[in-house]
Image (tube, rainbow, N blue to C red):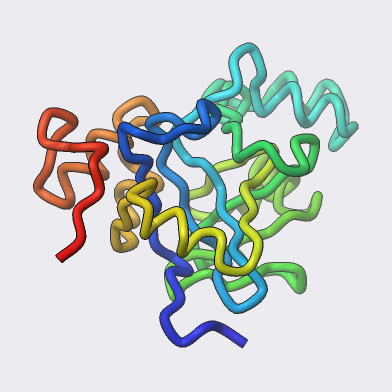
Length: 194
């Protein structure tokens, strides 16, 4: 069951005073949020020197010759650093046109699948219209995320498909702020309560 005031499907944007360096200037899509805690994926941090083709090779997901023949746009896809939890586990956020028996519906527009079938579909078809692949995730225990938000650690941004799939990875932090009509310069790490 989802919590009454769930943030599932929304973005978290790190404030300048974020004490945990792993989350500095991060944008996280919350894929789950309820009474049992929260889970999300960082969507604006690339893993250096790792491509989608490397993942396919490592998992032996297809004939090596077929992987080599994949178009560059598929072979060279970015692999994101999804978070510090389960760093060797892969997660795919994708449009709702793809669905398997293992897909979790995050919103009406997007799903989350963490099984090999979605990686095969991304490589060899039929692929979702839009997708991103991340290794690892973020997790919060019950009440932890709510405390961090109250302590001015995060801003929340409503879901925006373009921010997730169309904006280049390195521009997602600024674009998330722009969607709230603010910039880095107007952010303050000081909490204010009325």
